[in-house]
Length: 116
Length: 110
Image 1 (cartoon, chains in turn cyan, yellow):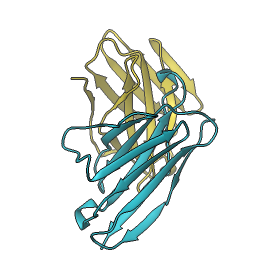
Image 2 (cartoon, chains in turn red, orange):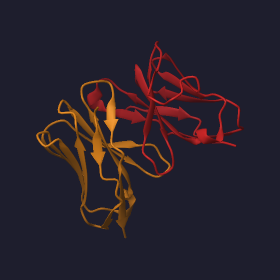
Image 3 (cartoon, chains in turn brown, green):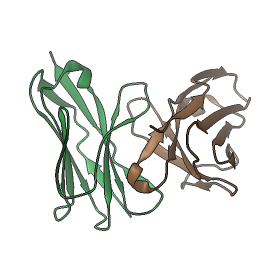
Image 4 (cartoon, one colour):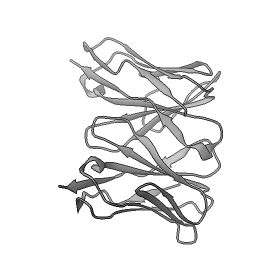
């Protein structure tokens, strides 16, 4: 089945620094990847849709200058949290779609970001 | 705006019982329906999908779809404590994007 690899799984950074999270589709090409954010005991929140070779589409309320998304190839999308602050601490999850929508999404294992 | 509604729970069932999770959706053009399971601190994993009206069974899991009522459900037979998790309903309508519900937390009591 489709596998999405996400790294790192856990990161602690100092306030004001930037953190890059990688999401790779290992055995399929993903023209579209999605980035979610989830606070403890809360539901998934879609942040942005990442399209290979074009600009990401951000959901309302998500700062595109703070959460930089790059989808430079059919197997890799990255999310960079710039100038991170403690309120950015969250669980970030990527997902990718293999083929048609009928196959659903495959999720990465998530990245637990803690900003101190 | 496409909406997917789930009861947030928690839904508590005794071990060995049937757990019934429900989901309604607003977009009549929806074509594909998915159930994901998410353990605390982990990312969601796909457990069932259904496209046609009726029932689809996979082991202890049965997905039920009623497009006329815009309703999809997941039944878990012989519930086990390891089934305790949040279950997410997701709906696709022929586009690239799925719409997720907020999830129902299931607790199976030993």
